[in-house]
Length: 111
Image 1 (cartoon, rainbow, N blue to C red):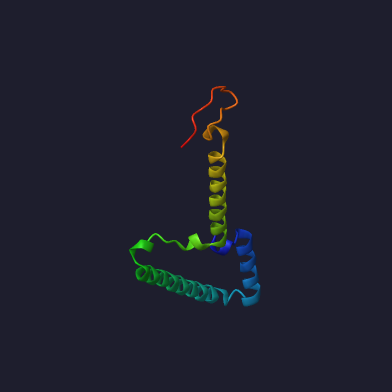
Image 2: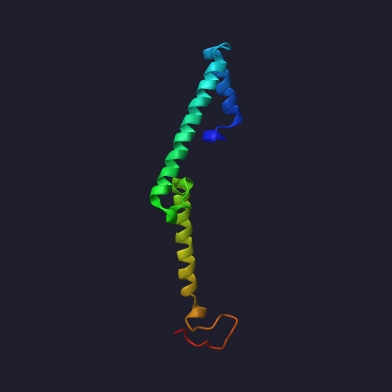
């Protein structure tokens, strides 16, 4: 949901709003809040479009979620794991001209 708010939190906010504002002012407050959210969303969309236009076509597939700290950390960890796997593969005995445990014949050395 919006801002990672679950249904229980929304219900709690709604009950608090009824208690604080009262049932007579609540519809007006909801309409003003939704209008504010529409304006913020419109501003955000226009800012994103403007930035994409200024950056040019090579950045057209750029997504704001790509810069989330969690996504950046996952990408870095994924790259580190890939590099470790590659290092392990290149340093394995079967690539260095040594025979595998099940094969007693020597293999030619890699050039």
